[in-house]
Each structure stands twice: as structure tokens, then as C-alpha cells.
Amino acid sequence: MKRHTLIVATALAALTATAQETYQDATLLKPQLNGTARYVGMGGAMEALGADISTISTNPAGIGLFRHSTANITFGLISQQDAPDIEGGSKTHASFDQVGFVYSMRTGRSSYLNFAFNYTKDRDFNQLLNPYGSTNGTSQSEVTATKGYNGIFDYDVKKNGEVISNSLKFTQLDYLYSNLMCHGEDKDGEYWMHYPKERYDMEQRQWGYVGKYDLNISGNLGNRVYLGATVGIHDVHFNSVADYAELASNNQDYINVIEENRISGTGFDIKAGIIFRPVESSPFRIGLSVATPTFYDLTVNNYTELYYEAYDGTKSYIDSDGMSYDYDFRLNSPWRFSASLGHTVGNMLAIGATYEYADYGSIDNREIDGYDYYGYETSSSDRAMNNHTEKSLKGVSTLKVGAELRPDPAMAFRLGFNYVSPLYESHATKPGDINSVGNALAGTAFTNWDATYRVTAGFGYRIDKFNIDFAYQYNTTNGNFTPYVIPDAKAMSPETVKVSDKRHQAMLTLGYTF
Image 1 (spheres, rainbow, N blue to C red):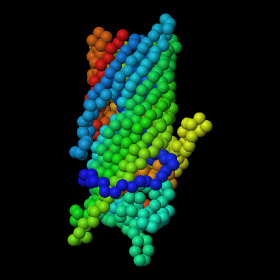
Image 2 (image 1 turned 90 degrees about the horizontal axis):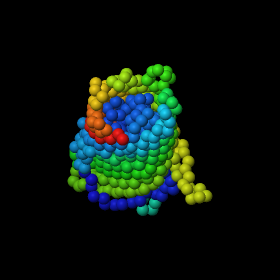
Image 3 (image 1 turned 45 degrees about the horizontal axis):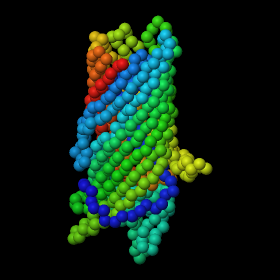
Image 4 (image 1 turned 135 degrees about the vertical axis):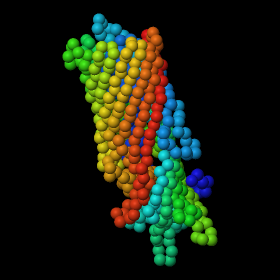
């Protein structure tokens, strides 16, 4: 169902501050694999092997293994295999993935001091989904009607019949549904009602990226210990449009909700790492690294519209309303820890393995609550939303393994594999009645994604000081989509349906060593 013309515009009741919500946090922070074609071709398992510029943010000590200055640029194509046809969406898009350089400076007989700068597209948000299923005789409007009837939000009614509330459990959708469809008055007083439908159909389009700019300093102690530190700046550009429709059996009664979100802003983090060879005579090495939370300062631009049409057998009743709101919030991602192993056999074979861990249940949603003496914004943790996040998200383990074979000094073949454990608890939901300012603009739909699997392969060729590398990545994950949860244990629930996200990525890196 396509967008309808906005008939009436309203404004959301004023909010002094707000924060993000759990499912949007997960979308912004969910880890991906990207970098140079060599790094991706080996599945990213280079944190102990080093000497690739993409390790600048996963183990900064990897930059300390460079013995020559180098520059790289990477670009390619990303395609979503199972993407539906959605107006305005594209299944395939070009991607500028990386550009950077390392300057290596000898400071002693066997010691080096290296400086590096690298840009990486850290996350690519492009995704098309079209989940649809049975409402089982319920409706999204029943969420608001149940909350109103059970007094979940404390509301007032103005003389003109407008339902208003200062409750943090009174969402933007609650306002629209209350005043267009769900609340009424007659001679017996006030009443709440909902409009059962037969099926739902949702078209969701996301696009945008997080760009990461890393600045590194690294070096070595003899030929056995390598140290590095990186400061990163993150640049967020996220966009989403969700077109949700419910239809009755007569195909004439329907509800349509349009939700548009744009999130932009910046963040910063600090990473530190070490690589060491425990046995002097062996090339076997161990890597350890840690990354602080990324401290984000973000802005949301939101627009929501509700349109409905009801047919009583002789006449159609049509109405719509919409509202927009902009707000700032802060978000701190979890700490990230990494341990890795690497080994080489002469100049022919390199193998690596990496384990990473981050506890996404510890994400800190923060409300901007004022300004300090110097005019800087101050913030505090949103305890209610953080409690929901802790119960809904969990620690994520990422295992990466990879190998590179060089049958000839100028030629390399690479393979890699990743396993990323599920980010969501199996019982996680979006209840819509969290006592949090981050709840006010949250929609009702959510997807609990399962584990992610990645298979990678690559090929490289060197001509004098130039190198060209190709990589392919197949990324797949499945999930369970739910359009809404009615806050009543006795209520029927809409059908939860399976969705999937299968991606193919082709990459090309051009490099020069000097």
C-alpha cells in the first residue's frame, strides 16, 4: 500500500529530552565485516597476523607490523539476494568501503614507528523487507485501545475531544490512534474500541551507513612485541521508511501507518592492542585488544502518519493525521574485547583466528537533561529503557577464521568464515509501555534476528609496488518479525513470520607500497 496524502497535521506534546530505544540501538550497532579485500577475503581473521590496514580498528597493534609505507582504496557492490520489490528501493548498490595509508618510519636497527589513517564504511544499513501474515483477528489499533482501557497511560480529554497525556507510555502512535479511531464519547461516557483486521503487510526500506575515521600510532619492541593505539570518529547516516497496512476480509476496510526515521550524528572511541610472539624462534603470535564504548551524540528526525478507511456497506469513512518530531540523544555502545592467534609457514601460508566479545545488554541509552556551567550538554542514563535493553539483548560472540596461500610471491588465494551469535534474547519483545522518553516515538514492529554466518574468499596479485585484491563475501541471517504486541496476556497475537537477509558483496582493493 502506498503513501496517502496528509490531511491533518498535529504536533507531539513537548518533550524536554529523549533517548533511543532497544531495537533501534541494535540496528545501529550490530557488527558487520568490511575493510580491504584482503582482510575480508580472510574473514577478518588478521588481528594477530597484522600488516593489513583494516586491523587499525580491530587490533591497532597490527599496524606495527608494517615495514614499508602503503596506501589502499577499496570499493565494490552489495546485493541483497532475497530483497522484495519496493518502490524507491534497490537490491544492489555501489559501496565505497575503505581508503587509507600507513607511514612506516625506521627508528632503530630493528624498531619502527608507524602512523596510519583509514576510512572504513563500518556499517551498511541498506535492507529491504516485506513481511506479511495474519493478524489472527486483532489489529495494531488494539494496542492503543487496550492501553487506554486498562489505564496504562494516564490521559485527559480536552473539551474538543482530543486525547492527551504526559505519560511516557503514551506513544506517538497512541496519540494518532486515540484521536482518529480508538477513543469516543456517547451518552454513557467514554469508551475505547479497536478495529480487527484479517491480515497485515509491511514494506520496510532502510539505507545509509556509518563511516569510521581511524588515526593510529604503533610500533614494536624488538621483533617480538608490537603495540598500537587508535582513536576513531564515527559518522552516522541512517534512514528508514516503514509502510504498514492492515486489511479486512472485504478488502475495503484498512489501516495504513507510515513511519519515517532519519538518524545522524557522530561518535568517538579509543582502541588499544598488543601482538607478541611467545617463542622467539617461531612466527606464531598472539593478539589481544580492547575498544572503549563508542560515545554517540545523535539526532533523530521522525515523521509518523496514520490513515484509515472504513466501509459500512453503503459509505466509506476516511481520515488521517500525522506528526513529526526531532530530538537529540546520546548512546554508548558496549566495550569490545578480542583475542587472536596467527601463524605463518614460510612465505607460503598464513592462518589466523579471532574471537571477539561485546555485551550488547550493557548498551547505555542516555537522556540529555541540561547544560553544565560551561554550556555543554549533560546527560543521564535512561534506567527504564536500559533495563529493557538488558533483558532483550545479550553478549555477542564473533568467531573469525581465515587462511592465505601464496603459491607464488606475486599471487595469493584466501578463504574465511565467520560466526556471529544471536544479538537478541529469544523472548525479546517491544512492549510499547516502557516508562521511558525513548518509548514515545518507537513503532510497534520488531525483528529478532538469529545468528549470522559469513563465508568469504579472495584473490590477490602483486606487480612490483602495486597490488590488486578481489574479495567475495556471502552474509546470511534469519529472523522472526512481529508487527505488534498487545499488552494483555489474554489477547490473541498477530502471526510472527520468518524473514531473512542474505547478502552478496564483491570488493576490489588497489594498493601501492612505497
